[in-house]
Structures are given as structure tokens and as C-alpha cells.
View (cartoon, one colour):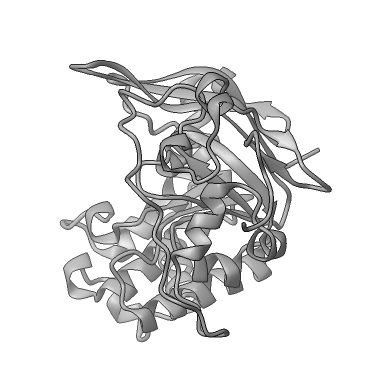
Length: 323
């Protein structure tokens, strides 16, 4: 049994233009100890997927319309709110992409990390302080005993992200969801955060969902990739298969638009157009207006995610290697 099994998950938001479908039947699984990357452009539904798992979809205007989120045999959507919050806080952890906005500016970082132990493990006093210092040292914060009493604005962006990682791993969760944790960090700090996450994964054995649009990070960290577009998963494959032989035209477009240092390539080939308005998606395949392979069938029938080899799925009427 998979550690996490998402089945036909649909999430919508109410707007002045009516209800907008942010997720339209997303399904994937996560195995124990595996790193699954959710890859796609902004607006593809990656962060909404994380919010749905963590029960952070604001209601109203958002709502989970259908589906199941099976964690370790338990359907999270069927749990009472209090029981689900306790489970998500202790066994499923989320690293937000904007650490400064996620940390409370009026409390010290040590107090905020310690809250995890006070609420979920009922620890107090010196026991909490010792656990906080150990965590800060584990994520590479120097002079941890002194810096635990400092406030978020007294740390650099990279250090704040390390603090967020410390909070996420405090209770040894089974799943860590990292929502673009390297966004807005310079390249050197990004590499340090990725290395830290890889170390955390190796030591804890936790499954990880890594949300990103950075193909370089995916290649370094992920075991498997799920490519998202317009609220749907359009391809899943091992990281090696996806980079070697992408089957969906969108996956191919993402790879072709990225610079490579290992081979000499001609000019980068951008994906034409832009992501569709979720309030007015094209009929049939949502990618067809940008797809070099689109035919009449693509406008008439929405392609379903279908098996396309061992451990691989593609939602395309005309999948195949690069033209």
C-alpha cells in the first residue's frame, strides 16, 4: 500500500466569474521514502494540491468537490477537522515557499519551533529548549542557543528557510511537502537548501512531495515526477525517463525551454502562448492551443491519463518522443 494515494481530487474556488476549477481530477501516489516532484508552470495546480492535502484550502471561497486523500490507509477528507489537524501537524509537514511571510514576526524562532513540541508532544521548559537547539544545529544554524531567541527579521532568507525546514521535521513526519522552498533564494543558497532536504530525506526516511518549476532541482532530488498543467496531471514517470524520453508535448516543451550545460544546443525553444485562463479552458485538451501536435480530436475529447509503460502515464492522444 502506498504511503499517500490521491484519487480523483477536484478543488474549485468561487469568483465573480463563477466557480473556477483549480484541480480537475488529480490522481497520484507517494511511496515511503520516495521523492515525488510536482512540476509545472505557475497556476498549474501544484500549490493547491499541497493545500488540499494539508486542509489549507480556504473555505469559502475554496472547496474540495470530490476525491479521496488516503494517507497510511486513512481518508483524510473523512476525518473530523480536529483529528485531521492533529494528524497533519504531526505526520504530514509543509514547508512554505515564503519563509518570511510564514514565520510570525512577533515571536522568536525558538518559540515558534518549540510550539510543535508543546502542542503535539506536551513537552515543557528545558525539554523544549533542548529540542529546539538540537533542531537548529541539525539544519545548520550556527550558535543555535543564542539565535533561538532572535526574531525572523534577524535572519537571512536562506537561514529563514532552514528554520522552516526545522519546523517541518521537528516531529519526524512520514511526509514532507516542500512548496517551492528555493524560490527567491540565490543560486548558492538554493543548492544548500536542496542538499539539506536531501540529507533530511536520507536520515528520516520520510516521503517527500517537492513542488517546483525548476528542472535542475528535479533532476537532483526527485525519484519520480508528475507534470501538471491546468489543474491536471499530464504525465508521470521516473525522473530518468522523463528527462530522457518525455512523452507529453508539454513535458517536451518544458525541457526544450531550459538551458543545458552538458551539451551544445541551439537557441532555446519557448512554449508558444501562455497558460490558459482557468475560467475559460479550451475544449478537449487544455494544452491543444499551444501544442505543435494538436489535431481535431484534441479539441473534441479530453485525453485521460493512461498507462504508457512500466510506471509511466501520459494524458495525450498523440504521445511520443521529440519530433
